[in-house]
Image (cartoon, rainbow, N blue to C red; front, side):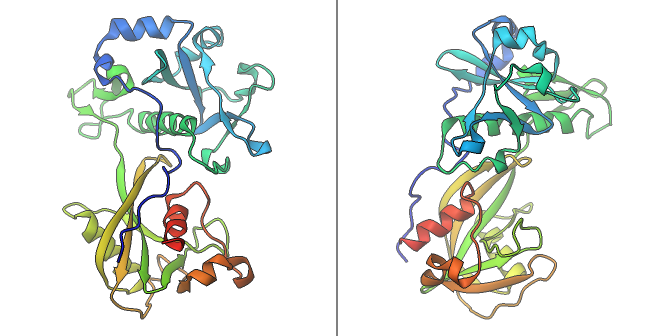
Length: 307
């Protein structure tokens, strides 16, 4: 099979930030930037991000200036240094302690929404920044206590390390790898439907988490076999996508099927079928939908359609 290359970057990738990791260990520099009125703050409220224009189909991230953040006392919440954008420091700040975030913001600045509801049709750099902030602060919220001894943790390295105050164990942001694959054979692709999908008519690629001691290719073959009963031969990498919902990296592949008989795992899937390119192009007439446009699953399908 001819390798299928990614047609364009995935949504939530292509970050415009320079992460400047070495500055995380420079508290004087970080504190100066926290007080700098030109710095930018990316507020996150209960895993929701500040966006405007989503209702008009033109979503845009909203950054808060350091001056406004100081006036709103945003810096008092948990924060983390994300990097710099055109020489301006960018911080994520968690304002979840507020019961209602609206009074904290000027009128018409935007609203707090789940990033997945925005419908990013094309990759935009600011979507990556919002995803970065959401994922990092979610990790901070879930690691307030030490997984070794249970002691309270405190933030270090500008929000990128949680260190136990009792045993001094250090905990770092985690990203769980998951494989996602379009299984194909000839002119047909295997798509499945899960009860967890938001639409009853949605069919998507198969996916699953990588297990300890397992290569990515092995994870692809195992997950496909477990979920659908299909045996897979060659596995080809396509692209990856940060997916901070809450903390995953999706690793996209094409997998060549060696068998065709489907036997689904009913704990994972409600249905799985082979679809032709014609079926997928005429999916509305065939009575099914594809995954969301901002997902790597959709990208895998679309790039296969034109291969």
